[in-house]
Length: 324
Image 1 (spheres, one colour):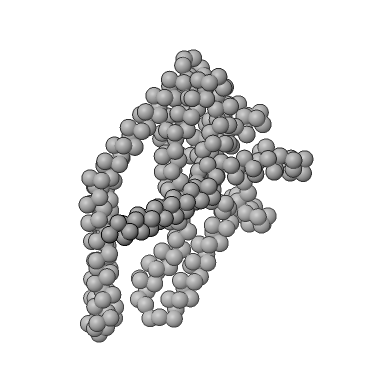
Image 2 (cartoon, one colour):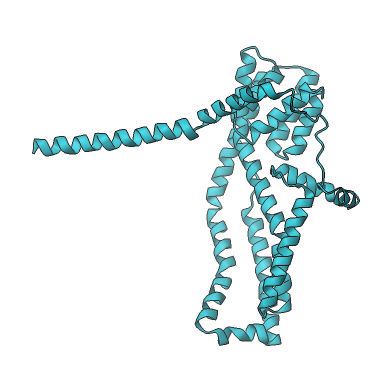
């Protein structure tokens, strides 16, 4: 009996050591500390190539790599708003590539829908969705990037406060955030530090940061720093206060999301249930559903049902979308 217990104990210890070793190996290869070390090694490796590389102080952002398309897009009204959206999403796309993906979605959807006999209104709706798919992707990427930046911002402000208490200047604190934090916030702070080094004033560099990252919390930080630079005061305590406010807001936002989770689930279920039911009924009895596509009265019913569904989803979204 004691031998069996000893064997089981040794097996348990072996599995525990195996799991612990795997976790430590993962931490050394993929953890945040490994990311900081990798960034520092890349900086050391590229430090000797500064004479070869050229740095663009103006940070030109072309609308397209094609000169003809560039000249054409410059005259389109509202094209700068689209370019700003791509910049805020963090993607490396330019406007020309974005429009190319949209045109590709339109072309592929047109070719696929030409093979099947689909009603005209459904064809137009599906073609519109495929064409707008890159815009939805960019908007979702932008929202996810902003959410990650807002999650990182309190830790970044605490790091800046600690560095300034240790005697560092404000630009050096920005540099530390760019070196020690992870992207996407670190990349934005590195950009601010580089702009200041290139001769841009601190106020202009911070305003550029607020324009690139349309986050309310980050704008509070920028405005507070700009006011402090004009009126004076303890910037370290100010950063600590902003960090505490942001953390409290994120905590309240998490509670609101928990309370509104039932409404979001209801919106998903009510929005997808008609399509799931229609697809299942079409598989079981295609002739029963074909009346909605072939008969004019059925087509009108489908159009009215889809319109009411869109209106219902809009109102549900208004109810469950609580801004904090």
